[in-house]
Image (cartoon, rainbow, N blue to C red; front, side, top):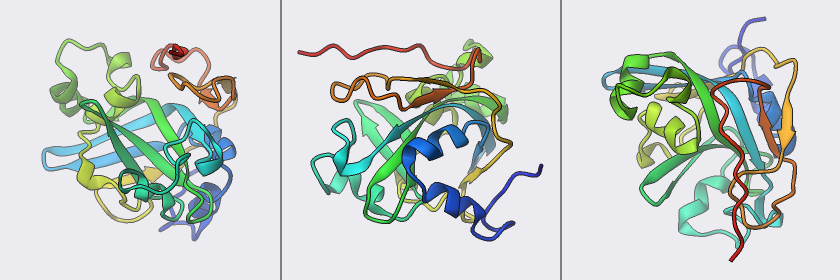
Length: 205
């Protein structure tokens, strides 16, 4: 089965991403994210994702409504929502209908192209399976910047998403590091994959 891009197969990818985030997130396992940087391309295959349900989801950045920081979440499905927490970035794929503000956080992946560039961003001694383990490391491996926020991932820009073969088996569990809706089972990962991050439950204060 060949990977599906909107430019190759009509609206197939858009139709998938326009679904509910908890349905989209497991289907993105095995998908490829590619960033063409000034130094060359970096690609990774996704091994861990996490769904967030918009303003109705207490763990979502959209829970308190539309703000300057989260405006990209309200764009049509298939756009990038990149946010900064402390000094780190994280990449999300917007899902669902426009203005619903649901999204899938890309938590981990396996670098398949441009490993030397990923190492230049992450450090030369980092083990291959740790290069893109965790949202911040994934963003660093891809050399993401905030100016990519709001980009159409299904277009011909420098940051793209390509759907791969569907993963046969999927682990399901609670989301990592959230202080609300902690038991919602919306974290999806490839079983036994060494790039998947460890589960950490946030402490309530």
